[in-house]
Image (cartoon, rainbow, N blue to C red; front, side, top):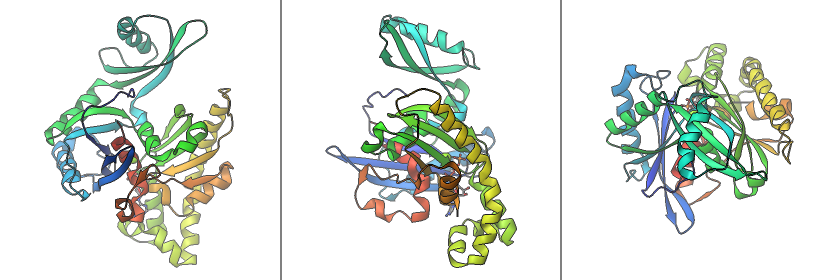
Length: 345
Ligand SMILES: Nc1ncnc2c1ncn2[C@@H]1O[C@H](COP(=O)(O)OP(=O)(O)OP(=O)(O)O)[C@@H](O)[C@H]1O
Ligand SMILES: [Mg+2]
């Protein structure tokens, strides 16, 4: 979670509720190129990380390595991430002290604000800055020990080794924020299958993070029901909408009410950011990512109803190379978090 240097080559593994995404980059000097990527279905959607289908999950992780293209992932070291809804993060203030003392003081202080006890959690921290009155501001991230151990264990059972674990939006930001965006206030909206995460970044730090427990799956179901087609066929609703104006209208009519909940939560996050009295109280841009980002009408609806410039983000903005062009267009938004994990140095 802290931006430490990893001494081993890693690949990024993003275990979602719908698919598992893997990505590996190779460096040519400072420049990273995508070396391998894959998207593999979860054995049992919705059973994410539940212990019920442990074997299926292990097989899917193995597949994500074996089926990666255009190369096979060639490292066993994994950088992965937890959904922000499962982790806790906060900025705490402590009097100045030695590094060694911090190691006991920070967890002790952090658990006062956390829903878990010290025994039930793993805690990681980074010193952000020392204030004028000699106090230190520290970013603390805590995660349930049971969940972290489960990640480590299934990854090990797949023949791999977990060496870095952070929270998903931080990884996504590494892929999606270009150097020009580093001084801006940017909201990243990740539309997954069953979760949508809303995160505001200012100067690369998280200012606001929240989760809505619905996403692309609800959109696909609504479209399938309206058009009386299967879920599988409804996954292609972008193409359907592009070919038939009549069907497009029907799809949008059922989808718009579903987007409203998200619009409200995005507005809340924006107000919360504004209330923090940072130098930039207004957002520069909203970046859409995750498999649901290309849902018909979504980008326009968010832009119009929130009133902030909104674009589908490019997860390859910090990469170079032709591998990038070979990834099917519909799969591009889903791979962002895995690419960001792969970029962890
Ligand atoms: N070809 C496609 N065209 C349009 N939308 C798609 C396509 N494939 C997937 N989706 C949408 O993407 C969603 C899955 O997105 P993603 O892969 O980011 O989810 P996830 O990361 O597995 O889930 P979560 O983040 O909720 O755990 C699906 O529910 C569907 O709505
Ligand atoms: Mg996801």
